[in-house]
Length: 491
Image (cartoon, rainbow, N blue to C red; front, side, top):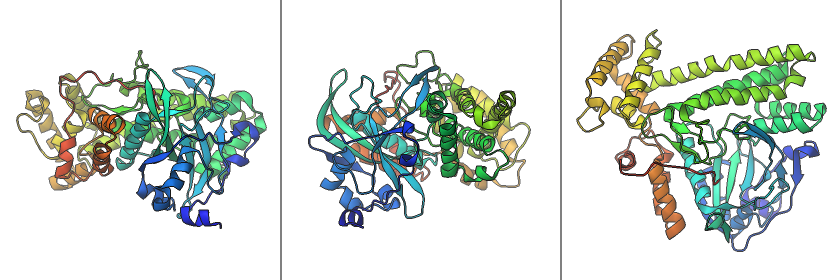
């Protein structure tokens, strides 16, 4: 080991860079003028075996901005394709570099990627850069998802570049250092199926199995087992999104990770008032990626994934198609079972009863009619808070009737009310990163150089099930007078 590796803690082993050349392009760095670390996720750094003190200074700023290659890294830009709003196109890392794969002290392998690090061969007409605001936004939302227990990429650092970028206006530039189980996407397989050889496709599939689903390798049909495993993991992931009111906003196939992690926090947001038609993204004018559509879109994306594996599933195309169709057909039931299990827990139910699904949908229907806040309605149930003024919903006769049915349902299990409340506290977060609060934090950081608002919000969302008095500050949705919230594909 050299002195740099000893002090910074890098422990790279770059397996993706050993794949066939069509899957990536080796890259040189695109240095910036005067990098400075704005945020460093010290607990995450420690879990990766990295020295936060070393990375928080000048050395870390140079690495995280793309001015310096850390020892053992092999910077590459990954190639992939994807269906964007249903239209297939060639893509790739247009503004990202994969530095390499850090082997953590627990033996796990994690991609270390720079996002916003400059042009690559896949940039098309873009400048390859990113603005400070969207990078801070991904930091706070991805870390909130971690606190909620939802599989996600993580944010290790946000580094200001000291250089402006130009969109509609001049904005301060920044680079996000993203940590992921891998950056293998459905779009990676679409790229391989479209432009690579059959042997290269098989090599990619074998690599993904070895990295994420090693148990599939010993199956009678490893590629069918691989497909089944990806479908199951995605069904569970989307159910977890729905259970907390998370809207990804841009569920293109290149934004679906094979590992089952949430990836790419562009126009994402959390829902306030419950409505399945909720859309925040400025470009999703047709509601393709609305909250209620997310399970259907996930299944559509997985069907595109299954198509890429047809040559591997069976040598006879007709048989391969049948295997793929059978696998995809299981998604709906898998998703429904994960979602129902999660909803039962949110409502304090330990067992299963035939009326559960109808009872859940009745509650959601009432929430939609009365524009009830999704998160706070479950909190009111958790703490048995039906005081006047909590929400318009809890004061209605219809809610009173529903509540009586719910309490009768809870009486059909051996666990008492205190056990149900304890379960609900574990499953219903005290807060989510409210859209207006995220924007306040970004405004303070970007326009006033004040990170205190963001740091306070980060602390609150990091442990959303603490239900501490301090978190009550963040529990209120935006005032009714606020303009309709809209997000943009800035990240």
